[in-house]
Image 1 (tube, rainbow, N blue to C red):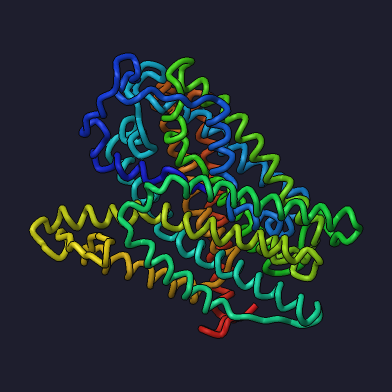
Image 2: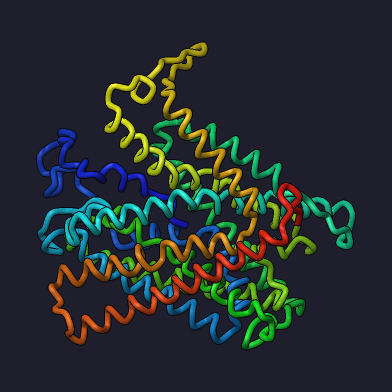
Length: 481
């Protein structure tokens, strides 16, 4: 999942780019062309960043998506989504500089590149889409964390009472507890500067995904795999097409890593040219990501068949490897506690920036109140405290009202996949290369964009249908699993 460096985009938005801030003084010969300290990244470091940012909670739903789609459609949709995102990411490497991909001015973030190549209108559209996606992703994270904590409870219950015990638990206490933790952490104005957070999240995300694959392969090798089919789960069901649409959204959600590519490219050495190195890194990292996704989806489906759970790790509750499943779920919780903050911080600060601009003389909005508790000193801003707390409360309430893991991920995937991962990168490529309308290449790019649009619309409709159906059968504050 994308959790690193997204806050860097906020620092460059609304024309507040790094150019307004003079670089720190460094010795001669130790700076790049933009006056910043020399970058030292290589193709291998960039590849590693891409791999770690693309693997997250979304991969745990890929096995369920494969079960809904079946072997043929599942593998096709998975390859189409991942290869389309990979192709757009390769084209995006040329947009790091403007107008020339080798000697032009650097674009430090995705939003800055959109403004340079596509202008103000597309910049605003991109901003709305980006922040809508980031604002809603907290709900998906809250649901995922609650389900992982319930899975640990169920695992302990089965260990004590045996596999025949239903072990039903409510998500609500975990949703509320997670919400309180995030509300407290959200009051830290510089939380994004904790560099260890990204490293810890990368390790844990890779860890729980690898555990899921390993346990699935173990189940298959020991002859306890599930029954699979070409058409997937219950092809005669009236809800089949809707579940297939939602499954496509889950796949799209797992492919949303392009937003941090500029931040990764900004770490590369100037020679050889960053765009050439980045294309190699995207190809290496993207192909490894595709292999990882295929392994997770196919092994999970083969292990559980038609009974594949929405969250792959939830299916191992009756197995003997209780401690390994618990460890994987702990990894998910640790990962998402940090990911929630890193992804929501840009939303917090854009609202606070707009409020300061709208009411520059308001003490409620602008005043920092110094607080001292013993030797600890910190500032409290009443607007920041009120707004971030209100956001956390709303996210918690929505997560309680919509505790539907796969449908929520599908909706998030549908919102972000076409506009941010495919359409805008293709449009920037067309603008940069000055590809004429009605040419063969232009038609090809538009066809790819249109197909991805159809996929996003289908995924959104499937997700909304699933949420609507779930709400009809769901009793508020009584949901157990």
